[in-house]
Amino acid sequence: MQRSVVVAIQDGLHARPAALFVAEAARQPAPVTIAKNGSGPASTRSILSVITLGIGAGDEVVLETPADDDSAVASLDALETFLQQVAVA
Image 1 (cartoon, one colour):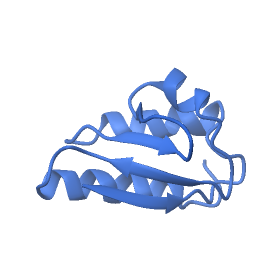
Image 2 (spheres, rainbow, N blue to C red; image 1 turned 90 degrees about the vertical axis):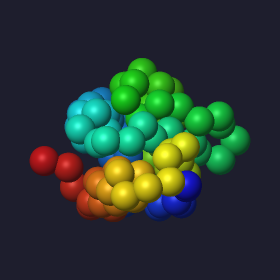
Image 3 (tube, rainbow, N blue to C red; image 1 turned 30 degrees about the vertical axis):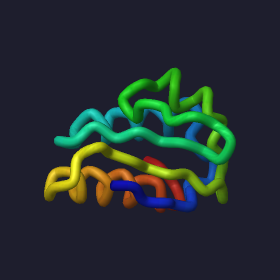
Image 4 (tube, rainbow, N blue to C red; image 1 turned 120 degrees about the vertical axis):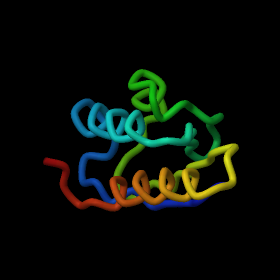
């Protein structure tokens, strides 16, 4: 199961936003990967992997999970919601 998302966070996934994103991913019941066009999938639970992708505001990413159940949907929903925030606290 996968979902394309356009990142709305003003600073993209750098430093603090990436740390908060990884923390959110760790709370999810299903494992999820994230990919940016031209790059292979990276674990959403690895801050180094997420930062290495260089995801900025306006970039389209693909969230994917091997699961195909309610926990997969919940995980994708939560991470999509996070990425669509304009500002991260």
